Amino acid sequence: MKRLASAWLALWLASPALAAAAAAVNEHPLLELARERAAAPDKIERGASDGSSVREARHALEQAHVPPDADCAAAIGAARFAALHMELAASNAEAGDLAAAAAGYRRAHACRPHDANILALLAGVLFDARDLRGTREAISASLDIDPRSVSSTRIAANLDFVEERWADAISRFRYVASSDDDRRQAGYGQLMYWLAQLRGGVAKPEFVTRTPTESWPQPLLLYMRGEYTEAELVGPITAGDRDDNIIPNTSTDERLCEALFYVAEEYWARGQPDVARDYFAALVNIKVLYFLEHGLALAEIAKLRK
Image (tube, rainbow, N blue to C red; front, top):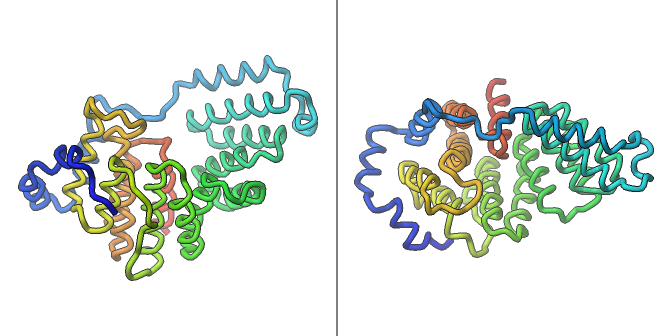
C-alpha cells in the first residue's frame, strides 16, 4: 500500500534517531505513553455522561405517548416512536447502562421490525455487555434483513474474531475492507482483516487492494506490514492533539486506544498473550468508552483471564 504523503511524514519522521533512542529505553513505548495519558491530572473519561441526556430522552418519550410494543408497528407515527426509543437507548448506552440501552433498542425494533440498523445497534450494545449469544442472534437477524450491510457485517466479524471463528472473520472483514465507501473506515476493516489472518495462522497475511487514505489509521497499516516500528507510531498518535488535525474522532487518546488494540493483537498472534493483556488493560484505562476497540479489548481480556 502507498506510503503516507510527505506532509504527514514530516510530522513524525523528522528525528528517527529520537525514536530509536526511545525504543532502546523502553521496549513497549505505547504502554509508556498510555500510562502517562491515564495518569494525567486533567484526564477526562471520554464518552462519560452526566445523565442529562437520559432524562431529556425519557421526557421526550413520555410526552409522545408511545403505544405498547405490541401495537407500535401498526401505529401512525411508528417511525417517530422508534426514533424516540433509539434516542433513549443511545443515551443509556452513553451513560453506561447497557441493559437499559438494550431494552430501548428492543422497543425500537418492536416499532420498526424490518429495520436492520436497529438490530445492529442492539447487537453492538449486547457485544459491549459481553452477551455474545444475544449479539449473535441480533446481528444474524440484521443480516437476514440486509445481508449487504457493511456496518452489520463489521459487527458480525468482530464477534467471529472474539470467538476465534477465523474463517468467518477473514471472509467478513475482507468484505468490510473492500466494500466500505469511507476509505478511512475501510482502513479499520483492513486492519482486522490482516489480524484475523494472522491470528488464524495464515503465514503471509495480505490487505485488500484499494487506494488507502493518507491519514490516520494508515500508520497502523504500515506498522502491520513492518514498515513502522512501535516507537515510530508515537509520533502520529500524539499528532492527534495538534491544532491542524481536523479529522473527527482522531485525538491522541482516540488514536492511542486504537493503536493499543491492534498492536496487542499482533503480540498475541506472535505468541505473547501476557504482553497483549497489558496492552488491552492500558487501552481500557484510557477510557475511550465509545470506540469499538474498547469493547473488543474487554472481550479479549475476559478470554485471557480464562
